[in-house]
Length: 288
Image (cartoon, rainbow, N blue to C red; front, side, top):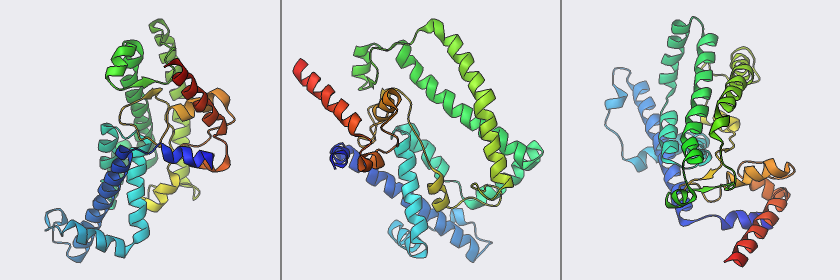
């Protein structure tokens, strides 16, 4: 129970407001999409995007009555995407763009991929690998200046704290690190991503993306994410103790297995981390 108490104690007013905002945006976005879809089905000659919108409360109520499970999944999915990406402004933009994709948009996208790349498998493989590499490098390049140039005072002014403050990046080692990362992407990550695309298209044991856009329920079952940024950014979600939580897993390997920390709290596998946090707090208090 100490793990649950600790997790609950990390919630701040900002986190509650952020959660409510993400839930509202996710639910309202889903409700508007359902409203447009129903309008286009009712009269195919009506441009649903230009149809008069119902009051948001009415649209959300009708969407809930039609399929409460799907709406709940869409709402949770939006919040989880924002949560998993650190609740940053970029996370909100990316999540909104991702959630704005409708089944009609996806149905038009797949034929374009097949025609442009010669086959659906080739096209989705290229796009998936590009998205994987782009996300990886974009995130890393955002953090790199903080590691190379930001002083402790500068980080403090930015309200950013480094998980391992005594570790600094050696610029002379960057070329070797870049070569290693490129090798890992080309020889490890890209084959795995390509294999997952193949499995999705050719088997029934993975999330299918060629027959239609997966439902929000299906997507929620397939979501998993872990932070590795190494920095505590000012907009991070309080109960999400990343990257400290997962960084400690790399130190000990026998605790902090999950991402959210809830299951670790329930099973007691975060006790070592809680003891570590208590020691750090005691040392900080003693130093002050």
